[in-house]
Length: 275
Image (tube, rainbow, N blue to C red; front, side, top):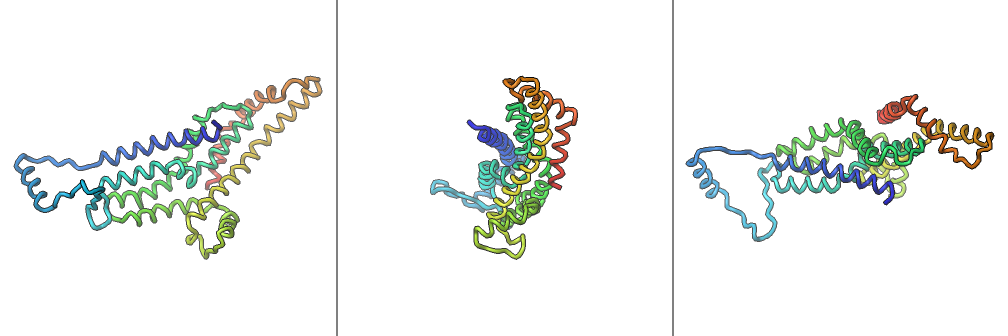
């Protein structure tokens, strides 16, 4: 299995665990009514008289608790399961995860440490850094869409529209030439950024993120290439042509990275690219 597939599988597993936890929280939410035996019997009889029991033998039955757009527990479960299945793709396409994981892999490759740090550590670090960077966006989605939908104050369509706005604001850093390229491919034009559909904005955002990540990776590679050239020149002058330069240069790369406080430097500058 290739490195990319391993990373994607690990990210999918971690996101599945997170989404499953959210699903269990939604399922656990409920109201518990405690009353005396007489009151409970009266309540059951009143419900039986006022609301007819649906026939579940005729197929799938869906109930809407009110006319303001609230959704019942089975529909909420269906929505959560849908989000659960799409969580890995959403994480990759709509957040900062793509740029972060690509830059981290460039760091590891430039150091020449092969599988150190391992893919699990790289994926976990990228996920938590993504959560840190995207926390303002996630908070807006929670306040503007998820909570009102859970309370039945808005419809599902309205919640989706409100949840889309914070992600659009985050993806507004997409380079204009990428958006124009996809608009030209589709043969359409838009007067403002708000009119651009997500089917055009999302691939434009991904291409823009990959370009920025490769530029950062090139900058990271420069000092380590200098070390490789110096070590290779020294070995050639000593007549040790059969000794691989990477074997000698890797300790010096790690030493330089540690002395320069490389992890803090890379992560800090990576954060600044999102501001």
